[in-house]
Every structure is written in structure tokens, then in C-alpha cells.
Image (tube, rainbow, N blue to C red; front, top):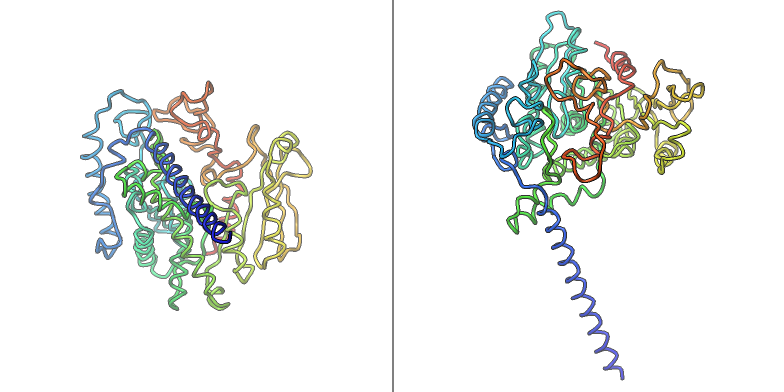
Length: 481
């Protein structure tokens, strides 16, 4: 009887194991089918540009970086713009000459690095854009500060050309380019203070440069750091991005190298997103988190002052990680964090299904809070107005009504909205009849699902910041040359 029971148990165990393996293989096959059934890859997904910068390129100064960038954009013109012949012309393909999305419609090609010198400047600012973006993302802020500062907007490697540029970069490639630009600015300023403004991945790169210096007892480079939607942490699912790409290599399916394959309608941002790009941000964030957790109090005190602006609603990076993996470790009130809450008017309150403040509240209550926290929230005085509520060391401080309000129909900011003012010509909401280029902020089309080339979720994502004037004021107050 005992032998019968043991034999039956073994059979059941084998059946369970084989069943699990079969289910796993079936699941993988279904995922592969789904991913390979997407739109066909174009030459901007499959071409490799040889003149892109990598950490091992052997460059020693920023002038060499710009010279290589010139060669890169000449190569881009030869391999993409001169080679591509569409089967059906598109008015919104950035890689078709004279389309609405052609970057050449603009007075400045914002896909390139830019440097604006100011002989009267007492300080300099390095501007760093985010993953899949271009220097356009930080051009509004750079233009504002160019009146008082020497300004450099860096094109990160892999960006501003074709989406395939992100398929084989590494975070050390990006970090070494930031180091070159930082070294260049410090030499140019000759002792004057250097600040950095980083958006998303650009913020993580600026932070990394300082953390790596502190880790080996080297002096830091920046007088202060200003972050917008910083990539301090990502959703846990990002850790699995590399496995999709590895599966693609194993079965020779290039489509698996891509999270999304979309129409490239934005002249200054990739819409298709390489799996590798997500993994690069994840690895960079993990490195920064590791360094911070290893630091003692003196090393943490050596981190330059940080001012961060973060929407509580952010579908790209983790808002909680900004507190959990960065701000809770910062030991003094020289650091500041601004959180933009959602629009909690009566109509929105009934429709929003997730109270994000409930998730962040315990972080503020249970973790050290030595920094200044400013919460931009609905005013108590008017339904659409906003106020700034200040807290220091978990103690409620002054509440200030702001001369700003939520626009009608907007229930939150987004990850991508923070660097762009209302009058931005690409992402702003106001139609410009004389413009010859695409106006993405105007692109909200209505109809049946599944027909349009731009996903509805992308059209409805908030793309400009109604609180941009407040952000500028805080940035100007934070800079003390």
C-alpha cells in the first residue's frame, strides 16, 4: 500500500512539473506571437550608426564629442534621410523630408547639443534630457537661464537620431558623456559655480556623477542639482526587460528588442522604445541606490544640494522611490522636494480610483524627513486654484495660495509634462496658425478605437506644465552664484 501511495505521488509530481513546463512554454509562445505580430520594423529600427559615442570611443574632451556628433548627423542623413523611400507618404513621419514632423522645419535642430556662452555670466548650467528625448526637452529652461548663465544642453549618446540608437547603449556610455560635458563646463567657467538641471534619466546621470566621486573621496562638481521627474527608481517589472531582448536574440526575432513600435511623429523624441533603453535606466537607478545605501553620514552630507520637482502621478518612474531611495537619506534641510498632487476638484474626486497620497503618506510619516517638502495641491479657497503647503521635519509649515490654477479638463500632471510651459510650440495647448511644423499639444483626435496611428493614451497624456512659472521661481531662488 505504501509503495502504491509513493508511486502515485511521483506520478502526480511529474505531471505537475511537466504541466508547469508546458504552460510556461505556451505562455512564452503566446508572448512571442503577440510581440512579433506588431508593425513591421523600419530602417530607423534596424540601422546602426557607427559614429555614435560610446565610453570606449577614446575621446578626451568635449570638442571631440561635438566633432563626432557632426559625423554622426552626416551619417544619419546618408543612411536614413537619403535612403528612405516610403511606400505611402506620411505627413507626420519625422524621417520624411518636408513632413510636418521633419526637424528641419525648426530654426534650430534641437536634436543636437547646444552651447550658449554669456560673457557676463557668474555661473554655468549643464542641462541633461531624459531617455528617448533630445535637448529640446530642456530647451525652454536653458533659454530662460541663458540671460544670466553660460549654458550647455547635452545630447546624450543614442538620442536625437534614430530609435535604434538606444538598442545597444549602456549607462556608462551616457555617464561618460555627462562627465565630458561637466569637465568642459568647469574648465570654461574657471572657478565659477556650475549647476546641473536633469530631467528623468538626465537627473539620474547627474546624481550618479556626484555619487561616484563621493564614493572614492573626490570633490563634487556641481554647486547644486535640480531634478525634474528624476529616474531614482522604476517599477519592479523593469528588471525583466533584458530577458525579452535575450529571447529575441535566441530565436532571432528583432521585434522582441522593442517594447513599442510606433509611428515616429515627434521631431525631437523617439516614439518607438527599445527594450535595452528601459534596462539602461533600471541599471543606472540600481547603481545609484546601491551607492547611497553604502554611504556614511559624512558622505551623504557631501551630496550637493538637490531641488526636485515630481508629479505624484507618474507612469514612467516611481514617485515613491524619490523619497524611499533618495530623500530619506539626505541629512540636512539644504535639500528640497516639490510634489505636484493631482487635481482633486469635486468632479475628479469621484472618478479617480487611486489615491496616490495614501501610498506616499507612510513614507513621510515613517522615514527621516530632514528636507523641505512642498506639496502643490488644490486651494482651500477656490475649486480650481492651487496652494503650496510646506512641511519641514514632518511639521506642517506655511500654506501659500499661488496665482495659478488647474486648466479645465486636466486631472494631473505627467512624467513628461514638467519641462514644458504653456506656450511651448510643440507640446503646448494653443494652436499656432503660422506654424509649418506639427503641434503635438493640439493632437487630440476623436473617433472609433483601433483606427488611428497615434495611441489614444498618448494623445491624452498631459504634455505641458500649468505650474511652470512656479517651478521657474523655485529654480531661480535655489541658484545662488
